[in-house]
Image (cartoon, rainbow, N blue to C red; front, side, top):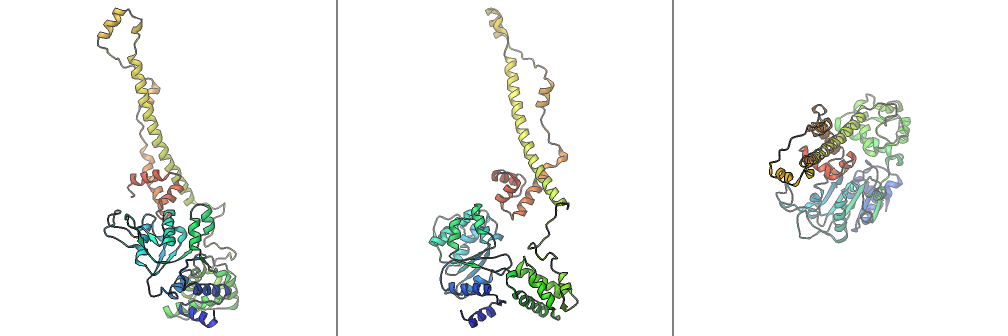
Length: 410
């Protein structure tokens, strides 16, 4: 691709940078745009993957048709099939009308599936069928529908690791990966970091009507040496912080050090606690989990004691009904059989009394409240994904659904 064409694309989409890896990405995107091949964009969070699908769509024969960007990780597992493939009226609670879904609305256009690695396995199977045949069935429908949609997907997940762990279908990966595009992380883009800082500083100054901040040479070197785990998004946030909070307009390395993490070799956004640091949050989570499991054990014990009590009652009744009348003469036995049998209740032993007493769960444990809190926290941490929540709590899916219903969390 000619340099002039490349510069036109960068100006049109406000892309800043001249590193060879970025230029290669744009070159591949423009070459694949006229085709209908599926594209898989791979890169870390915050590198700007969302720009490439727009470049592909706007330079394709579908540019006059609809374009939709969908974040697969933000849609709950229970509704994602309906969002993508549509549904018919009455197919589930809340389905008051028919819905065509994104694949129906975007017919002849382009769908950008961001965070495709977060799709449930059942949805992955549906997506594979659409990619192979262009056919899909809306939720609750029986009629097969056709669609002609160009798919561009993106992920920050290690797909090959997800495949080995059974979280992503290998056949879907190869179908999506017709044309792979690897977005470079910010730490590998060299002087592009300084150019981006300059752009964000200028935008912030114009927006808030203030003098633009600039960097000294030592600050530029520090900026390029840092690993930038949050990539372009993190750089923009730090530039805005410096522009607003720093009284000086010329930023030195000492000033810059106050706004970026001190550990320049780390790629972690948050500090990982060392072994000697005390985390009360972790202890509380562990305690909640232990009490949650304890509640299940108490319920099982109650059921076992009820069964044992029933068995003891049956054995005791059978023993009372059994008499020694077999040793009596025949006439006496006959007379005895004709008399009404009066069964006298034998006194219970202390062990039988202890087993027969109905088990009462101590009120001060508040196990129901603790179980509910633990369940809510697990669902919240997993974005409402019940399968992941059940795995975290160490219980089966069926047990999780039963307790959701028990606590009224449906």
